[in-house]
Every structure is written in C-alpha cells, then in structure tokens.
Length: 368
Image 1 (spheres, helix red, strand yellow):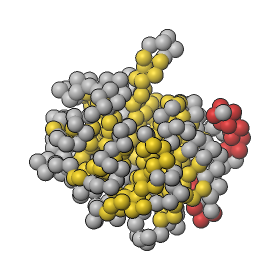
Image 2: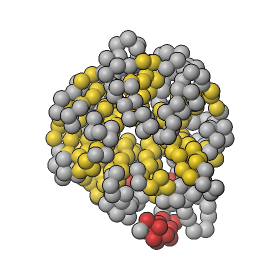
Image 3: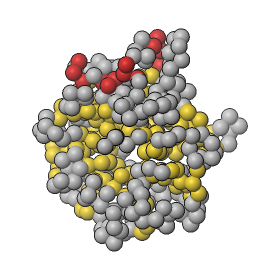
Image 4: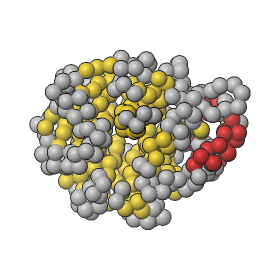
C-alpha cells in the first residue's frame, strides 16, 4: 500500500516542493540542515534530504529539523518535523522525501508551520500525529489516517493564548491512548484516539518538552525546570524523579529507552546523561567528555540490540560510547548545526549481516 501511495504522490508533490514553504527557516543560511545518515557509527555522514521532484533537483537540506520519528512497524518509513516548513516523510529509508501538504483549514498553513512533536500509531502505520504551531501562532494537534495524503485538525489548542502544544505520544500497548503536553505544564490524555481529552495534571510553570511511553504503559514527561515526571497508572498519579543530587537535571531535553534492557531509562539534561535501571526509581550519572552543567544534552539514543552503544548530541558535537559510558569518542559532523535528534536502528544489509543505521536531524537554535 505504501509503495503505491508513494509513487502516486510524486507528481503532485513536485508542484509544491519548490515553493516558498521549502526555503528553510529564518535562522538557516545554507544547505547543511535536514537529515544526515551514517552506517559507521558516526565516522562518516551523508545528507539524506533529497525531495522527490520532476525536473529541477530539490531538497530540504536548508531547513532546521525539530523532531524525527520512525514507524515502529516499518523502519524505512520516517517522518520529520521542521522549524518553519512543516512535515516531510519518506517510505524508502530516506532516499526520497515528500512534503506533507495542507489539506486542513487554510489558516493552518502546514507547509509554513513549526512542528513541535510527531508520533506514529504502533499498530497502524498510516496514522500519524503532529503538534504544530501555525504562522498565526495558534497551536494544533493534527492527524493523518492515510499515510500523509491528507491531514485534519484533531485538537485546536485555545485554552491559553500564549501557550503551545509541544509533545505528543502514543501508548505502544494501547494505541487509542494518547498524551499531549504544552508549554504551560499541562498534560492531556485521550482514551479514544483523540476524539475527546482530559487534563490529567498540570506541573505549574514547568513547560513540557518531551513525552515518552514505555511498552508497559508507564509515562515519562521531561520538563523545563521541573525535572522528570513519571506516571505508572496512565496519568492518574504522578511522581517526580529524585534528581536533586544532579545540579541542572531539572532541565530535561531528551528521554530514551533501551529496548535490549527493558528496565533501563536514559534522560538528557543540563547536568548530563542520567541512567535508571529500574524505570525511574533510582539514578546514576554517566561520566561524559563534557563536564556536568557544561552543556545541554539535547538528544540521546541507544542501539536497540546493544544497550552498551549510546549516542548523544549537544550544541557543540556528536558523541558515542561502545561500552556503556566507560569511554566516549566524539565525531565531527559535516554541518554547522546542532544534532538535536538522533535515531539508531539495526537492519539487515544486502549480505544478510546486521547494519547499524544512525539518523541525525540537524537544527539551529532560534536567534535571540
């Protein structure tokens, strides 16, 4: 189904890919953004931002990437959110990309919107959710149910004029259960795939940055200035992770699970990378090349087959370990931007051997 849909959209996409909506954000000055791929643990990188067009070649390399997700059922299907150019998606492992067109209300202007969060339904690959901020500054949760052919508004955020929806997550054990987080510190839950919503908690003045849901249904929320919050009963009750001994850990930027070690949880913070081997009850800190509180750990990823292989990104570089943090190396990337998003996957190569694939979405912080 995906292959047929993908081919049918190429011609239509060519009509919009070269328009003003694909020129990059105001902070972008060159084609060193978009998506980069590595098959040698970050030693070398290749830009993978080519758009499927007819005639003149085009790409979204000038854009700043805010978020990247991969389809849990199909690793060749990926969705990318940007800081001013909407959503791009691929069904062939990044060899060619399409832009999500605006079939929602006109004021949405999807191809010019900021995309704050993305999530793919773990059981239905054609259902994808996105939290966006339109050029009007209104914030929405939008959804496609047909692999990107059309998008509609699922939730219009009008409660607070100056607040925005940030994170969206789907419960992998119950795909009808969704969680949303906003910049006011609110967390909302839907138990019917977005048809209705309930505010389950507000963390006062603690903007929600990211939400991750474990395969067992436990919910983890990373906040600004409020640390990590956890719920073990679908959002009915919440706990705050005990991180006071780690100065700066109240700033949480990234959450990562380790599929090969189902009780392990990693978070990227202003302090550094913290690890819990009991899903949030106790914590230890990795000793990194960067000193505590020296930088922001914007992205963290763990090899799904080998928990000892960890990757992280900061405003100054890309780092990796092959021995669970005993030693680290840093690798130069062919871009001036920041590795804000890291994905790692293991797939079979042409010869049948396992190949580790690294994907990095590059981003430039907004100009102050």
